[in-house]
Length: 497
Ligand SMILES: [Cu+2]
Image 1 (cartoon, rainbow, N blue to C red):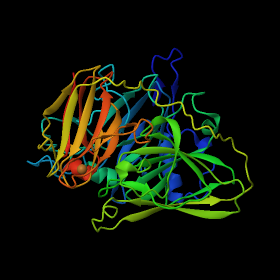
Image 2 (image 1 turned 60 degrees about the vertical axis):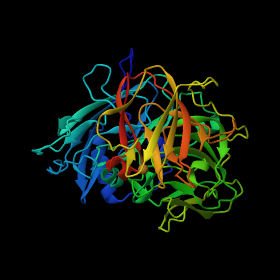
Image 3 (image 1 turned 135 degrees about the vertical axis):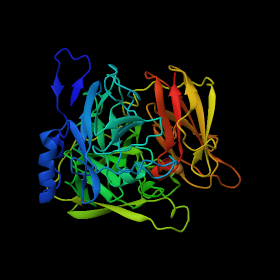
Image 4 (image 1 turned 90 degrees about the vertical axis):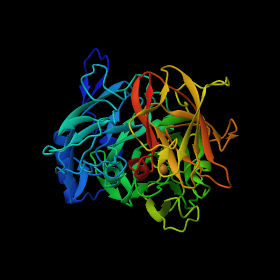
């Protein structure tokens, strides 16, 4: 259920799976199994029921889960029901091991919402310390730092009227089970629509596709949930489309970057991690630089919106797009990468879709930082899946004051690759490896997740950013979004006071 905050009309609109009009160009051949699960999902869209299908967890029988479409200011109500079989595997003395694999919860990745409860205090919000155990679970054996919910819980995510519009996502975030559950499919898109009149017409009018890079490959997400792997997207010559791309992988060091040459296709990045850029930048489909230097590479957790235009004078043809995932091959660690493919099919009569040669975009709708020095804080990603030398233990590692601005440097003193993610508040990147990014660098932007350069040549890798802790007090987490690393201990509790 989604409703407006402070709505005089008390409008109470179901938006889950709405917007099918936008997706009318989607594939025509939906398998019978998928059709029946769509129908089931629509009968009670406020519920996300975690249930096994063919031995894998799903939301309402499908993976990815149904898409949520919100406007800024909307409240999203979700009842999460854990219908997985009871497993009494929680009783571990080591919380930084794979455990509690049928216990789950819900995280709204990238949203600026409360990390504790809703404003009334009655409902859970973006609180990853909540653990929803299966109905018949006898011995949850929680660590003492978690809040037990039996079988189900009600979440209420309240966004503000000025919440950034963009591509976000939701996924399970139960420590010890995150990589397994997300990797097996407990993830779905969460879109906050642009306010009318903010985006240039050629973007506002473009049909949209949501693409999720998942363990099973690249998936064209259906609004009702589920979707086609290795999809073909059909475009008429001259057609303009907006693609919202979510890197939801939880396998290995799951970076993703475009690796194919595409000729004659206009493609521009217009948003990153759900935050609109001040100007569009061309997508370099053949850019194979390291992910932290490649503006179109996606660390696990990152999202990118691109606007694409098929060539006007094109004959009917197929354009394969390779998306290479896994960073090890790129770095010559001698391990396999997979190629996740997308095919663009140019077909049909030409269309003269709205377009612009003006690169200007409305920008992030977040205040800039000025050049004044800010209090500094260093977070170090350390060996053996630890942060600041400690594995996750539930104690508060850092406290920040509400309403303050800080400069953080996140270092990586390991030779491995990690992806830093912080909940609730995004950050504005200013330096990579201690070198300030030029003012016009496409890497100088807002993100909520970033790949960390590794320790190399005797020097730690690092990323420096400015951030502000706004609106919400409470405990939340920073962690590695290589989710296996998070489960094994690479997570810290922090608190805004
Ligand atoms: Cu990591």
